[in-house]
Image (spheres, helix red, strand yellow):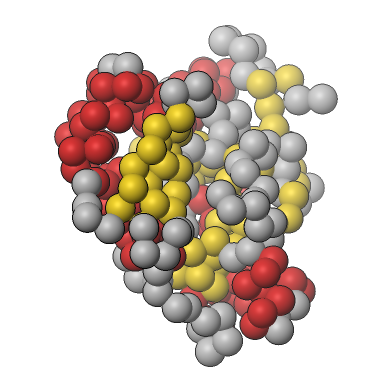
Amino acid sequence: MEPKDLRKLLETRLQNEDRELTYNKKEEKLRIETKSSGKGMSLSLKGLAAKYEERKETLLDEIVHHVEETLKAMNDNQQLSGSENNIFPVIRSGSFPSETDSGVPLVFDEHTAETRIYYALDLGKSYRLIDKEWLEKEGMTKETLQEVSKFNVRSLSTDMKTDSVAGCTFYFLNTNDGYDASRVLNQSLLEDMASKTKGELAVAIPHQDVLIFADIENERGYDALAQLTMHFFSNGLVPVTGLPFIYEDGKLEPVFILAKNKPKEDQ
């Protein structure tokens, strides 16, 4: 599907008297803005259009739900103070925007060569990324934000499904609570997974709603990991990275996996 075709489908679903929809043909982005508040969001249609062929109406429903909940959150008055238990870190790709559509810098930290850590206030059905203006307005320091968010992510469920692929054990964490990828920041979880692996512990963060661990015991395991990671990366609504990691000495190191070859570390 072409971005312009997805644009028409979304415009039909998102029309509202208090909304203005504008399309940037050059960047292939659809802007949805609430007229009464002037607040809104933009959707990059090129990547979404590529996913449409496989997921069709399911993807469309997810996008519309995401937009509706995000716009609702933007137009509500939220406070960080008193909501500390609902602040979580969120993992995003290294190319994710560093500021809001209106130019306000977002609060984030570098994580790996491929990923960054942003911070969000959970609102139930959606969340709002925390920017510097909001943080300053609330009188909260970045250090406090980091501390409470990492404490909260450690309280999330770590139940996983396991599967044997290519003679290696794969673990899938997929609760769809919006913070599956964030659980990679739970150092205790990483250490626990490392202690139970027989081979090499690999970690994949293909998109926001899945975290994959793999106990790589043979060469075929690397190929399976690469294929699985790319599959999830291609289908996620909020993709993070198609490049897996090896967990070693308390650190995540990105690796390139070549077919039938042991991975070579990304320099």
